[in-house]
Length: 141
Image (tube, rainbow, N blue to C red; front, side):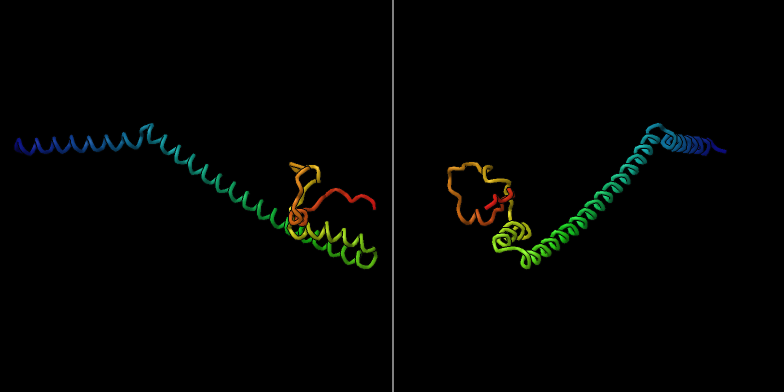
């Protein structure tokens, strides 16, 4: 063999050895292992987050269903009271039921008591009084 051919084979062997060494170094390095561990941990956290989001969505869906059922039960109770009130109660009692419970079911804002307003000396508009419901029990007449 000629000197040029030997030289070409040596250069080719060095290049192949370099490529092989580079490949082995990349696959067995600590950095690569660390990257794999971090990717696995990230995947696990993403799955955990997705499970948590699903649980939260299920919780609020169930809460909304229960709340709708409760609202329906309150509505049914009010209708029962209203029908019974028509048959059994006198006019002032019927008016109180309509004034208090009827407005609660009509999504009217509720205030806790009359003393809670910011300026008791300031007169209230009739419109505001009609839209608010006082939760204090009525005084005996």
